[in-house]
Every structure is written in C-alpha cells, then in structure tokens.
Image (cartoon, rainbow over all chains, first blue to last red; front, side, top):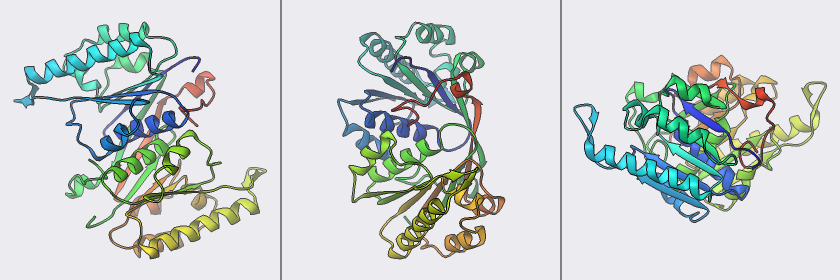
Length: 172
Length: 172
C-alpha cells in the first residue's frame, strides 16, 4: 500500500473484534501480510484456529496471562501486555507486515499499562505503508484525534441483555 | 446451536460486511456451517477468494447483476436479488447451514424488491436453530423490532471524507 492509515473500532456493541477478523481475511485475499495481536482475551476463540491456518501470511499472537485482581490488572497480566507491546514495536521496525491489528488494545491505554503519549509516538513514527487497526470499547480522545477512521459499534439491542450467554462459534 | 438468533449490523460506518466475514470465520472455527449470501455488491472483493477456500463448509453466493438506472435498481438487478432470496428460502428449508449471512440485504427491503412482511414471515418461520445475520446501511424499523441483536456501525470519522479512495485488501 502507498500509505497505511489508522483505523479504530470502539463502542459497546458486538462487532469490533469480528470486524478486525474480517479485515484480516480481506487483506489476506489481496495478498497483504497481516499481524493479529490480541490483548487481554484468552485467545481460545473459535476464529483463532482458522486464522492460524494462514501462517506465515498471517501471524496471530495472543497476550493474555494472569487476571484482574479486585478489578485491576495483575502484575502478571501487565507484564504480558508489555510483552505484546514490545512485539508490536518489533513488527513495526521489521516491516514484514502490511496490516497490524491490535485487538482489544485500548484497555492497555485505559489501565495506563502503556502511556498514550508513548503509543502515539509509535504511531507517528510507524513506517508510512503500514495500516493499523485497533479495537476496544473505550478509546482515549487523543487516539480518536489522530485516527484516520473511527467507527463506533453502538449497541442498539443485545441478546446478552435478555440473558443469552456467549456461544461458541458466534461470540467466542 | 440450540437456538439461532437474528443479528443486524446497520449504520453508515465501516465494519458491517467485515464483521459479517469475521462472524463467518469464527463460526467455521467452531465447526458450524455457514452460507454467505451477498447482495448488490459485485462479489469481487478480496475476501471472497479466501471465503471460497472453505467450501463446502462455507457456501459463498453473490447476487449482483445489472445496475441502478437513474438511481433505481434495474429489472435485471431486481431479478437477481429475487434469485438470491429464493436461494435463501431454499437454504432455510434444507437446514444444511447453522449460520446464514445476508450481506447488504437491507437494500432489497428498502427498494421494495422484497416486501418486509414477506421477509419477516420467513424469519418467523425459520428453523429455530439457524442464526441469521443481516447487514446494510438502513434497516426498516420492523426488522429492528424483531431482531435479537442490533449494532449500529456509526461513522465518527472516515478517511473517504478526506478523499481517500477504496483500497484493495482494505475496503475491497
């Protein structure tokens, strides 16, 4: 690509991670190389085994470990997120991927595991050709400001509110 | 699945079709069978060749032909949409798929190629286990009413507004 942009998918509705998966698949179909870095989630969702089939054209990495303790990320979890962030910076400098997806990454900023100023500096200095996609419910306003595309996935209705549990193959 | 629901992805933001692709991939990963019926679009987007690799676990069908003439769908296009709708009804009665995606289908209702009352009757009488996903910018209120999950993809920012053209592997 001539120039890569920064896309954000935020909001409380279903469809953020699934849109990121869709973007990965579309990019693969065009012969682009995709890195899908997933944060905070266990990484055992049904789509993972499909995404992994496309290695090395698609690199899937999960950064989850440890838990939230009293509503705050544990030290173990923070260390894992930092590991993922280091991986992201390495991927940027290696320039082997056209599209880098940071799934659920906004929580790393929300919990201040990574500072917004450091992250924005990474984005400003990224190789021009690399497209970045970031997902997560709430994004800091600084990130929204520098993004080229922002879609808010807004919950109009959700069956969770009717007591439906997350289902294999649909939500996980 | 014990019970399939009706999911709608609407709104003016990027991410509706990509979320549908992501849902298809996740469902495949869980061993579900997926039918992806695409309406109005040419069907030559980059993701199509990836989706087709999963046949017969994933059936991709495109229903596009003819054009809009003076802002209205041509007879040829209408006939193709009707063909797709017949295909949808057949798939429902054959019960071979767990998830049926009707990508960009809301336009068929908007242009009254298919009446909302007929479509709602199909949905009400569908096999209980089948999950249905529908995408498209504007959905009639009757459809929103009977849907179990509705996400509005809301455009907060879009690089199209900055003059960026649709790119292979990202938008098409």
